[in-house]
Image (cartoon, rainbow, N blue to C red; front, side):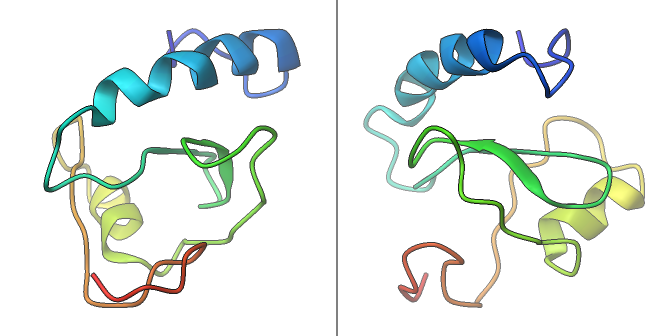
Length: 88
């Protein structure tokens, strides 16, 4: 669903947002899911719709994408959460 989304179609974005909780269900490792554009700004996340734009281009998971890591990139770091402010 995400690969086919143009990041602009709001109805499609909401459809994807509604399905995101299934990806997190019961996971002790993954607290949120983000869909980011090529500049590292989240366009969709599992916290709210529409997403609060957060620039994350310096975060390790985005840098892994730039270094052509194999999809999907599931990676965290020790910085506090951008939205929650909580330690990881």
